[in-house]
Image 1: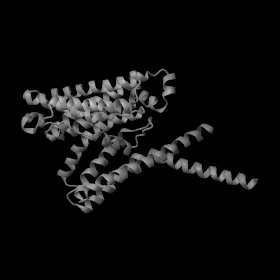
Image 2: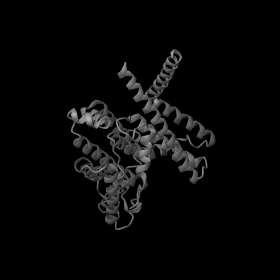
Image 3: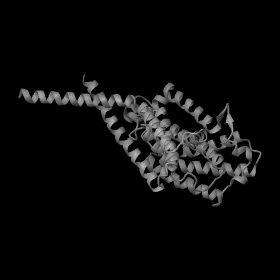
Amino acid sequence: MAESIVDDNSTDLSNEKRTSKLAAISKFRELGLLAFIVILCIFVQTKNSSFMTLGNVSDMMTNTAILSILALGMMLVLITRGIDLSIGATLALSGMIVAQLVSTYSGLHPLLAILLGTGIGIICGVTVGFLVSKIGILPIIATLAMMNIFRGLTFTVSDGEWVSSYQMPAQFVSIATSKIIGINTLVFIAIVIYIVAYYFINHTRTGRQIYAVGSNPESAKVSGINQTKILLLVYSIMGGLAGLSGVLWVAKFASAQGDTASGYELTVIAACILGGVSIAGGSGKIPGVILGAVLLGILNNALPLMNVSPFWQSAIQGAIILFAVVVNALVKRGVDRNNLLKRRI
């Protein structure tokens, strides 16, 4: 009997140690992801010396800027236990409408084009948010339906035709190539959004309520948090960022098509998962999401430079995402157990 008690105690102690280690990992997850990115960069540089050149790094930064902007919005949606599969279609619709306007009215100021695209995205986001928060449709169903509607509207508005670079005024295309205080405009816009989002999430009551809704919806409801308002706000923000990204995307690639960013929502979700955002809701940090987007940007750039077959590129990215999901699941389990042990004590 005494031996079994000793064995049980030793098992409990080992479980507690394992749990505390996983809980500790959660506090330094972003540092671990940063270390992995640094090691990956060093490895790729040894394989191809052109990887760390100024031109290639600048190209990676501009490519990652749009992805990271969308990932910030998706993070808020995932925190509330939702998902938005319509952002690629929203991006395409916004980009197409703005591209047609600037091709018709060449004197349209780029800032006005950005505001218009963002407004179109907000309308799309409000529509999705209304279906989820007011009507009560599951996010995956509502956004899947709206994805097809927005994509259909894009083809309808464009009549199936493209808007090419020669149809766009130079001042509009320069959004992607110009600089503000020495920083590429796309990167500058992304940085401003990071700062605003960081303040909003960490220093406002609404930001804390978003986490509360995702962590425990029932408790949030009892405490008086208006979940309908929070969900409507979150999807509106996501839509606005998707609309903004549509304008930036069209300016960068100087082309607007009906199938623009088709499937891109999965890449955005992958960036969030790599950054430690839990699909179960309630957890996620901006630094992690940015690092997740950077990691995907590096992989998209590095794998072709290393002459990796296109057939293997998706498989490698998928394996890394799967690994991140497993780690997140183990860490979350450890954190939950650690919190449970603290309550018992």
